[in-house]
Image 1: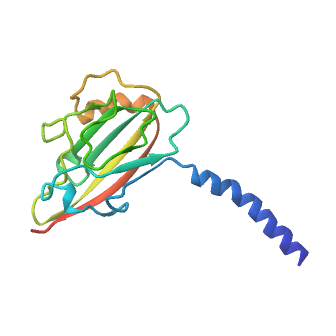
Image 2: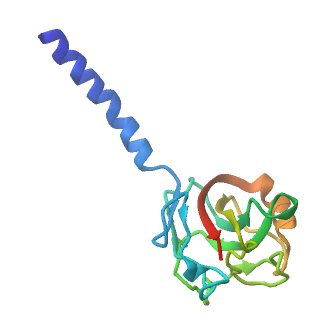
Image 3: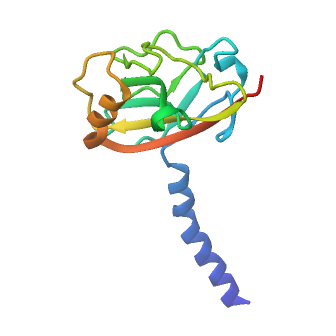
Amino acid sequence: MRKELYLLIGLLLTAAPIARAAANTFSINSTATTNNGPLPVLYTCDGKDISPQLSWKNPPAKTQSYALIMVDTDGSNGGFYHWILYNLPKDTKQLDEGVTKLPPGTLVGTTNFGREQYNGPCPPKGSSHHYVFTLYALDGKLSLPAGEDAQTILAAIKPHVLGSVSYTTIYNRWG
């Protein structure tokens, strides 16, 4: 009996730091849908085409800015980019639904639609595509002008990434 008690106490003491570490993990979330869940029509070309709410917590230490990239992983050429933000200030913790006023200093990249804005999912009718929002925590700001494309941003952030998190949604366009 005493041996089991000591074993239980040992397990609890070992589990507590692991639970705290898991609770402090860099993460991203949305009130619009669940991770790997369906994206409501509101956020697509078939709805109001507004950006979903996104929030994040527990960025890596020394984070100085963020980059956010939304890509259709089922799109042409290995990815079709729908939203590109960079130089988001380090104190930013969320983007509201339908955000039109970005945090000061945030730059917007050019999507595959040729626009500097959020462009919601719009896969060909009769298909289902996956849309991945990836948030990169960076050790500084990028020295790039506004309007850069996703490939340029991804190349520029590569040596500056402290950590990244992704959130996947699915849009079925069966109409």
